[in-house]
Length: 228
Image: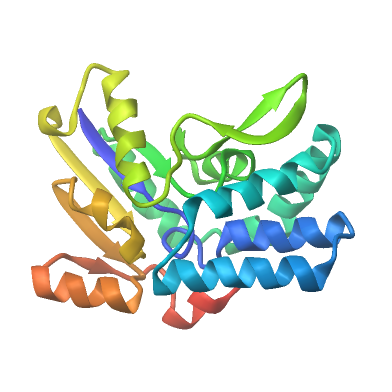
């Protein structure tokens, strides 16, 4: 088995889909833009600078979903994908994914952005499998919790290990494995695959790539990292 893994935000897309969705939902749901905007920006700051509180972030994200009926969220999500995600899908990203498909790789999107948002994005990109935080649903409504493992930092490693175990495989039995990511937060998974590829990397990850001799790739201009 050959495994091709892809991070999403600032790796395949020149946007942060989680932050973009959060701002979109705050606006669509007529929530307090100042209060929620400040929290979104603080989570983004700590994610980049260190000290990211995974539990608090997940409580925030799952809590946003739980505020609204599922059908209403579905309509908003369709609009969000059409207006804020699809225009940012780059042919270079699609070509990269397809090159691994042609090489016989099993393909998976491994992202911290939760599955309610990223399931249609994975479909849009043509990625067969999605490893992402799964919001809990009971009787057709989100509960504010999530099920399974989270997919931040070492949580991405656990998610991939579970994915492989379900297929009777492990990192050690893979014929080949590659992971594309932009973020130093993904170092645990980058260190587990045979071929880590720093893609549109942040400054810390680019420095580490230079030190370790890891290949680097740019699918879009560095200035696009600030796009939302």
